[in-house]
Amino acid sequence: MLRTASLLIAAFLLACFPAAAMADWSKLQTPHFLFVGDAFEGQIRRIAQRLEQFRDVLGRALPAGATSSPVPTVVIVFGSARSFAPYRPQFEGRAVEAAGFFQSGEDANFIVVNASTGEQAFTTILHEYAHSVVSNRTGSLPAWLNEGLAEFYETFESRSGGRSALIGLAPAHHVQLLRGSTLIPLRDLFAITSSSSDYNEGRRRGVFYAQSWALWHYLYFSGEPRASQLNRYVLEAPIAVSQEALSRLRLARICNRSKPSCETT
Ligand SMILES: [Zn+2]
Image (cartoon, rainbow, N blue to C red; front, side):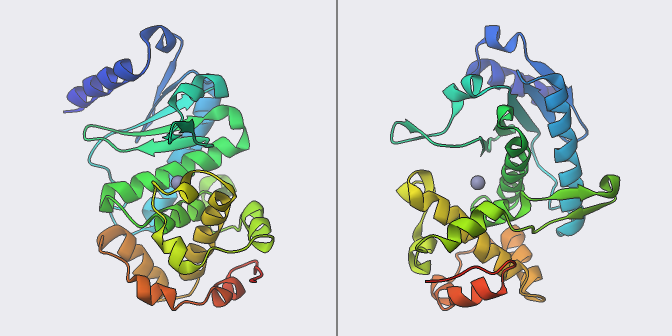
């Protein structure tokens, strides 16, 4: 079974990437992921270590089995913006500003990251892996929920040599953007999908991600039973969120209870 999966992955990689380009690629197999790419071996090793630590923490924080995957996960690590460029996601014929992406598949899941973005490569890999966990369990979620969750977990930091971890840190760029922006009305936020313009380009794209993060952060830190209900919904109940119920939430309350607090207009 493992051999079959390996052959399928090799076939996929050869179909997607020129054999000549792959000749210089490094390969690293870790307990839960296969890493390949043209980044330096040291970069790939550091990314691999961070991702394995993150998976371990998620496995303990989420309900049992949340991080198990029915198919192997391949992580493709590009060493430069140039080598990543041909594979960047497209929206209406234009490349989307992205440092990575996640693509599910029947035989394997793929996480693709541009390692030349420095520290951002680490948050990108965690962000995309969070999408992978969700995809393995529920298939799809509303865009704001999926991105809010991934933005929330991407700030994961390992502490005490991996014996403890910090999750839920507020990204400064999101807080700053929310303070200086007109917020998207919740009804509009909930209506955004992965094929919406606001999801893929323009200034509101940043606000969409920041606001989705703030909403997830608020719900997660609302105490029990809400935090457990939220995890259970994401991992076990792929039903439509009651848009009407969510609309009754007042963003002012969300901002007041998020840490650090943000301002509303
Ligand atoms: Zn995302």
